[in-house]
Structures are given as C-alpha cells and as structure tokens.
Length: 377
Length: 226
Image (cartoon, rainbow over all chains, first blue to last red; front, side, top):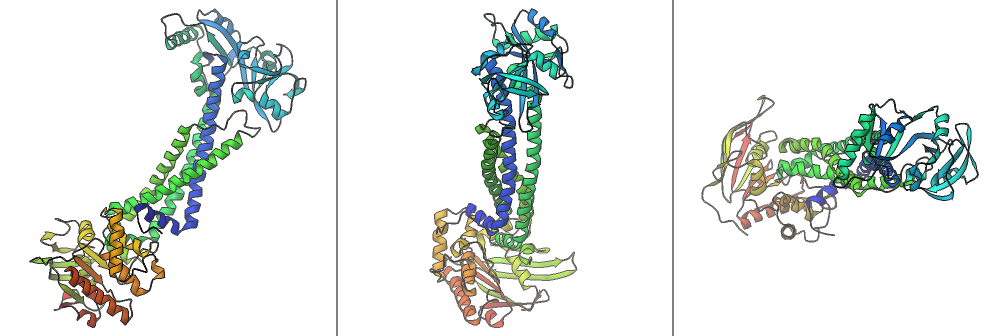
C-alpha cells in the first residue's frame, strides 16, 4: 500500500466509491465515443476510398452537374469536352448504388469498354466486357460475397448479366463494385443518353506552368465551354461527392446525439456525486481547500470519466469498424483502417465532454459555503 | 516544534453580530473576545446559545453580519482572505470527526496539505509523524470505518495539525466519545497546546471539559455572560 495521497488518487477514490454508477457512466460515454469513432471513421474511410479510386485511375477532373437535384449530364457533352485544348481523354460514366441481392448492395459503375479507367484494374480472371452486351465485371470482394465466377450469370434489375471478368481494384470501393457497359446501365437505369459524371484526363502541363495553375486553367475552359456543369479537381471531388457528404453528415449528426447523451450521463453522475458529498465538500473547505481546489477536484473526476470512457469507446469503435469492414453489406465501402488523427480527435472529444459535463456540478460544489455544507444532513 | 508566544492577541473579535433568515434569527449579539497567543480558551453554553456560531466566525468558516475579527492585527476577509486563513493558520476538530470515508488514516491527514502544495514526500512524512504522535503508528493504513471513535478523533486531530496552524479550534471534540476516550482526547489536545505553544479554543457544553481551560467564557442567547 502506498501511503502517498495525490490529487488524482483522491479523485479516483471518489469515483470508485460508487463503482457501479461509475462503470455505467463509463459505458455510456464509451458508447458515445465508440459511435463517434465508428461512424466518423466509416465516413472518413469512405472518403479516402474515393480518393484512392480517383488517384489510381489517373483522373484529373470530374465534370458534374452544378445543381444538387439534377445529377445527370448529357452524354453528348463529351464531344465538347474532347475539343478542349487541354483535355487528353474523357471517361463518361454512371455511378449508382444497387441492391444486387437482399443482403448485398454494391456500387455499380457504367463505363465504356474503351475507357482509360480499366488501366487501374488488374484482372484476376477473365477480361473486359463489350459495349452493348449484357456483361459485367466484378470486384474480387463482390465476387466473393456473391459467390460468382467468370461464366456465371448475375441478375441485375431483372436482366441477366454474364460475368466476364473478376478484377482486383486499387480501393475497397472498386473491390466491392460491379462494372457494366455504360449503355447497358443507361438502359436498366432509364438514363438513355445520360451520364452522371465525366472523368477527364488532361494533357501534360506545358513547361513553366505549375500543376495547380494548369488544373485551374482547365477547369475554367470546361466550365466556359459547358455552362451549367462544374469541373472539380479529382482530389476535391472525393470530399465533395454527394454520397461522401451524406455519410459525413450522418456520421457527425449521429455522433453528436450520442455525445450529448454521454455528456448528460457524466453530468448526472457528477451532480449526484456533488449532492451526496455536500458535507465532505464542507469539510474540505473547512480544512483549507479553496473554491478552485473543489472545482478542480470535481472537474478532474469528470475528465477522468471522459478520458477513460474515451479509451473504452475507441476500443469499441475500432472493433465496430473492423466488423463493418467484414460485413458483406458494408465491406465494399469501408476499410478497417483508422487514421491516428481520428483517435486523437476521439480522446480530445471525450476529455472535452468530461470537462463540459463536470462544469455545472463543479461550479455548484465550489460555491457551497463551508458552514452550510457542514450542516447538510 | 514549538511556537514562541508572541506579544498581543492572536485573535480579536470586535462587536460580532450574526443573524440568519434575513435578521429574524439573531445567533450572536455584540460579542467581543480577545484571545492571546498560546492561550487555552473554553467557550461553553447551552444548545443554541451561539457558541458554535462564535467558533465559526473566529475560525473563518463564516463572516459576521457586522463586526470584525482580526488575526494578528489583520482583518479577516479583507487583509487576509478566509480560505487562506483556514488553510494556513487554523486547524479544525469536529464532534463527528468528519474524516473522508474513502481514504485511509494516513491519507486523511494529508488532505489539508494538498491545498498548500506541500511536496508528496513531505506530506507522507508529516502525516506519519503526526499519527505516531497520536499513538496510531499501527493504524495508519486503516479506513475510518475500521477505527474506533477515539482513534478517529485522534486521526482528525492529526489532520487539524497537518499544516502547522497557530490556532486549534475544536467544536465539541469529546461529544461522541465515552469518558475514557474523552479524557484521552483532552489530554492530547492540552498536551499539543503546551508542546507547540498553540492557541487552543474548545467549544463544549460539558462543564468539566470547560473547567480544564485556564480561561472560560460562557455564552447565552448570543451574548457573552462571563
């Protein structure tokens, strides 16, 4: 037994006095932080997979509709794009989320058979599809989840598509995607003559022009030639992607609700603790503790709850993300990789939650008069 | 360690008036007391007489409604704030011991020292010395609920001495003890007062305890009787 009493040990003994309540509170804030880590980690991972997909394909600019509601673009605009001086090649495409089976949903891409996008794929078996034919190629992960091989038929929206290739993609998004001929996807999606995006590869930048300047110049050219459309650098497109935006919003919104519940849990525990320890606070004040000593003690206890809950939550969150990255429903859009910055953010959020939750109880404890507190029964 | 007695009063209470409930209850009326360095003073009176209120005012736990309390010539609450006064100059002993239930005896004694940023090693050494002085060298690791009432009060006295105060204030220190333990606690308090040259102020309603003090003031209805 150590005879040494520190401020931290005193705080810990106070928390451990009501073990069950402390553990329940830890569990509450832990769940909130777990939701934060899992959901924000999920949406971040989703975004980084998009980034990886763009980077691997060598796309410089994505051309999309300016408006949020109308997301389709005339395929004929491709001809205008190809006439622009800085454009080397374009890839018209459709992107859609599809339920392939009741359990498995996947990103479905519509590409032309001659698109440069194929360069980033490595075929494990089979090869490219042909335009105008009911053929499909599957990412390795999706093929595994659907238990399909080259030669099998996959039913998509009532049409049988022959699996002609299985590929290994550069990102989890591609690994879990189905890629169909553009014209076939247009037909089954009732989007004849329409695409959702043009991916654009630029010619090499002229000497003396920086890549940023060149990119801006090309953006300007495209937007001038096609008013109503927006040219977005590929790296930004990953973050601006509507699906990514929705994932981020849902993740932060849900996490915020969970965090508010967690904060209320700690605040309730600390308020009860201050109420139960009113007389003890009076004793501390009588034997020389100043108001700020009391404030610090209660805030410290709340912060310990926040921090410990944060660590617990990170454990749960990482486990949840690992699970999501293995589930067939979500494996195609998320990996289990978590950026260290998210973990630091989670600890920061947890400690901040503790501080916020402890503020009112600490203030109430600190303003108790020693005489009133000592009289408290 | 003993404090050489300084000339002049250590505490001077002038015309203290304390009321509660917006003046409807008058606990103290025009009380003036002067207490010398190293003095042992007993304050007695029946329940509700105002003796504990007087102790709270001169112990810096509360401020008077009117009147002043001076510590070594400095006005409490003005020249010296009440928190600092309680932390550095006053040690409290309560009737109900008021130990922290989650802390062992040796940890309880260290609690006041946490407020003064005494180093960790010094805190432990000081707590060990005080508990040995109280005859509790074998009870240092016990929690309050593992100690007898007399032992708890001795831990409380050790805690009151932790920051080496010049005034020891005891509110009914033997109120929860049997006669044997009462005698022992009084022996300890007077021994400490003599050994350290401290000022000892005891509030009691027991005459035999009050008569142990060389000076004894009686309070009735909020006024000093003698």
